[in-house]
Amino acid sequence: MNEKVKKLKEQALTNIEKATNLKEVNELKILYLGKKGPINELTMHLKELNNEEKREFGKILNDLKNEITSQIEEKIRYYEDLEIKEKLEKEKIDITLPGVKIPLGAPNILEHIIEEIENICMSMGYDVVDGPEIEEDRFNFELLNIPKGHPARDAQDTFYIKEEEILLRSQTSPVQARTMLKAGGDKPIRMICPGKTYRRDDDDATHSHQFMQIEGLLVDKNVSLSDLKGTMDAIFKKLFGSSCEVRFRPSYYQFTEPSVETDISCFACKGKGCSLCKNTGWITVSGAGIVHPNVLKNCGYDPNIWSGFAFGFGAERLAMLKYGISDIRTFYQTDLREIRDFDRREKNND
Ligand code: DAH
View 1 (cartoon, helix red, strand yellow):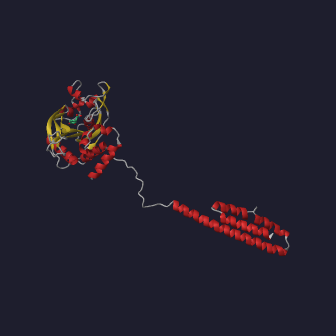
View 2: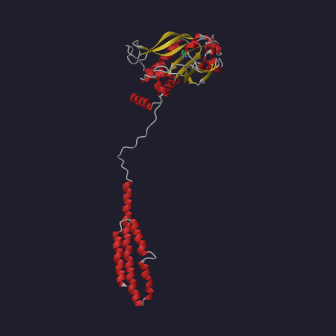
View 3: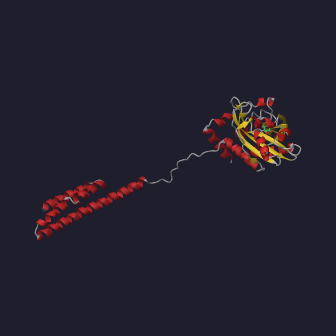
């Protein structure tokens, strides 16, 4: 019997010694110390022995059990510690490593310039209003002093949805008429309306069948061309810098009289002459004028009491000038590189 115990002890201790991971040690624990294990089995035989032998052999078995248990527990502790250490090692964060870059969105260039103009105009008391892109011929043309058959319509090759009645607005000027009619003819108006417009143009570097305009209208009493000039001056100085100068050239629009073309001094060459200003020192940025008495009348304002000025900017043109973009199609080709590049340039300007 003693021989058997000795062998069992040797075998158990060698196996525990040889175990290379927690799983193996736990298996040995069940194997040697479990209910069906050899120690338990030997314990069963104790009852066959006399008291003296029972005491002696009982002690031997007890010692064996204690020794195996302590060896197994030591080994379990060792592998548990190792496991924790390995886990900690694996989950270690190197806080000196650079983080993962999250791509950030950037403002759309057109939105950006429109917002700039909105903010400038709002600071001068203008409201920002909206109008429909699908428009009635009446608002787009007739109320603006451009009756059916008038040659001025030819300049705006229009997309008609329903002939002579419903169209895609070819300008944001119909919002002038809508605003005046809504105001009811008895109160002053200061509004700008940024919005999409459409013309049957072939797309190229400077033309697009779809583009953005920003319309402006002021109606009050005793409004003069010098008020318009002062307003243009304030807007373009804010947009292009305080050295920007504004000049008016006579022009023609059916809904303004007199009508002007607004030029700004070329910011690239400071007026000396370059390719941007075609060597003239000036860049055209807007159409404008004093609201035609017929338009005031058509829209419910008495031209004997009220007067006003109006202006229209091409948003793409302003953005192209300000941010050095040479092709209008850039705005509509969803090339993210342009937007990212713009964002970078903007940040460099800050
Ligand atoms: N609607 C004109 C166009 O699309 C631009 C314009 C010119 C608007 C003069 C105005 C203005 O309000 O007074 O060509």
